[in-house]
View (cartoon, rainbow, N blue to C red):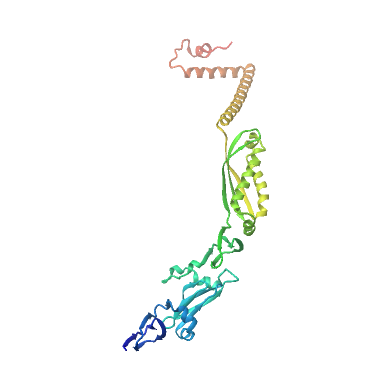
Length: 378
């Protein structure tokens, strides 16, 4: 027979095993153990780590209820329950369903809040507040993989899918959903005005001219639930409707009609697409054609047409000016015919213009010869 001395510190607990079987829990202090013919072993557990991870957990919970009640905090969850474990009032772990654990009573105040998740996948608001920004704490919260946290901005909404079905639409705010026993997905939707570009559309006009058009449109959601209930991908559906509307507007009109009134494309596309989108919870705010690109040979032909038109306009203007000048000369001639003084003034004006172009003039016969002989009209 041997006597063994075992000391358990104040921040420890001891587990006495006789021949591998549980015998009792040793409290802080000095213990004298008589092993006799048996093999005694003491395992010490620091109370700073309250989780009791041992092969005897199931045995103690099943066969030693008094020991469990006195020494441990017992956690036993069914398949439809989760637990929020806190230490000294601070959340430290999210326990999944069917958890069976023991935690030492002692230095750390361990409490477990049990939540039933059978009827609702959404976590209560009080729980959401405790889960927000857990990564900023000194000690990370364990088990967050089983929680889906969602932050919906002020200008958005969230579509909640549970097991492939739309459950509800979330407004702005913070939310959390239990992912245990179900598949939960939240898709964020922007409710602000959005833009879509329909670029590089090759379309034939009514007179068989191939045009390349670029269209820009703005739109928004008016009923998110209707949009995602009736459409798999609302944005792609809008894009296709804009394509069809653009083809309907261009394919039924000639090139001249489109070039004379480019706004007709915007008006036709808006009217056709807006009526189709209203039933799907989408609203078309505005449509505008950014570019109309003509094929190379058509550009040359139109350039020639424009050049010919401008040349014709220039000729008309030139003929109009020539006619006006001739009419002015005729009126001047009629005035001079009836007024010798006006005729003489015109002669002097002509003489002045001629003199401006001559560097040197030799005059014979005096001033009278200059006035009467240099320029003489019969």
